[in-house]
Picture 1 (tube, rainbow, N blue to C red):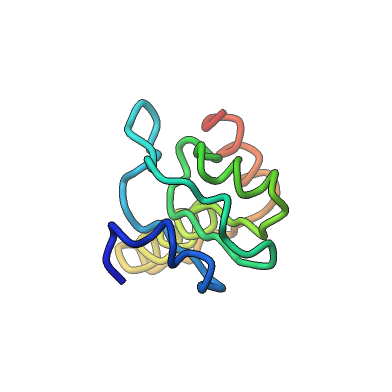
Picture 2: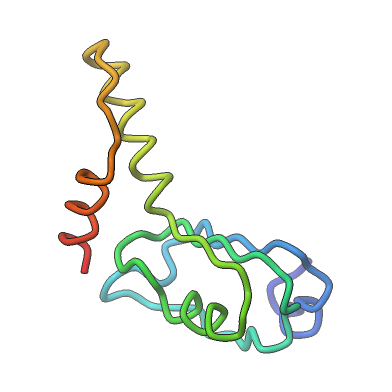
Amino acid sequence: MYWENIQTEIVEYDIIINATSLGLKNGKDFDCDFSKCKNDAIYIDTIYNPLKTKTFKFLEDKGVKVFNGLDMFIYQGQKSFYLWNKINPEIDDDLINLLLSKLK
């Protein structure tokens, strides 16, 4: 797919993944109309700051299943900590709530 064709071709996709920096806090977001994507599509946004980008919010309101990058961030950090220290830190609700409080 070519980027300039996304408006017409997005209706064909079941999974849409944003693995770019578009949508980062104080950054540029997609300049694209996602209204034609399937309602049963899945949207994965690797961004976690902010937790919800403009595109994420739009698709969430449309009823699309959406996932942000917070889990990826947490589990990459856990793996990195283990590789450096040979200690596997526990990920629990307290840690997740702490991260969420800092990212709001």
